[in-house]
Length: 90
Image (cartoon, rainbow, N blue to C red; front, side):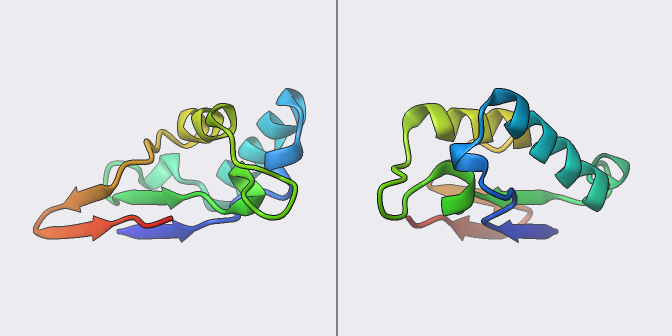
C-alpha cells in the first residue's frame, strides 16, 4: 500500500484546466502509478495545494471533484484495505 499525503500537485488548486491536467500528467510520470496499479493499493489524500483550504484559497466542491476524477480517489470518511481501516479527517 502506498499513501500519498497531500500536496500532490504544485498549485493545483489555483490551476486552470490545462495546467491542472499537465500537473496530473507530471505526477503520474514521476511515480508511474499505472505500472504497479494491480500489485499495490494507493490512497491519495488531497492537500491545500491540490484542492485549496488555506487562507483565501478555499476548497470548493469543484476542486474536490476534479481531484477525485484525476486520481480515481473518492474522498470518503474511510478506506478499507484487507483488514485495515483508514479513517480520513479534514
